[in-house]
Image (tube, rainbow, N blue to C red; front, top):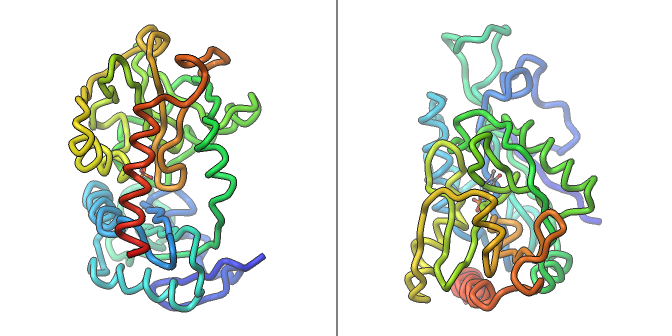
Length: 288
Ligand code: PMP
């Protein structure tokens, strides 16, 4: 198995080197943000969209952006060049930096950028995307700024663990008022009477890059009508199709929720068309 390769503040390091200090605020408070970009054929897919979201997350948390978007692109390229990996993912994290522990922002603190590239292969994902995933629902216990891609992922971690223990692929989260928000590491959609339904982009969900690609490129090209409106499990139970999206899952059909079949229990036709359109975009950007 190929090892991950790693960088701190733009310099290569061994992924196991203890380069981050104990008083890094990411370590103590989860005070930082991250991004994950998928690599196909040795190229990053949708990198600019990820960088745009990274800078938004930094702004929302008032973490100074000490690298330019161009430098962030260069660091991704350096990882690709050095590793030679053709398939995998690049994880990027920026914390507020290291300072004696205190809740409020320290006066003089320099953000810390770490990046890793891990090789991966798509076979498992392909199999799952073909047959569809079984998912469960869990209470959405997360904070009220899920729009920021922050390191505070405990709610998501606990939800995903429940899915694993239930033998499910993902857990979709439901707020106290019954609103179905998103997966623990994915956005969630329904297709009913040929209309695509999903939670609106507000503070309760992450505006996924895959979601944006679906909304801004794929839905218009397929002539799909989109409704960005909240819904409850009563509505989910009547859906024809359901699916999830994320950078690593891509477009993942959902075939059962809480052990009840979605539609006829196989991936839906509209979901299949969206999958094909997404693959075409990957081809165009990374294989041409
Ligand atoms: N929601 C959550 C909570 C996530 O963690 C992710 C994955 N980062 C997504 C949605 C999907 O985002 P993207 O399409 O940018 O991977």
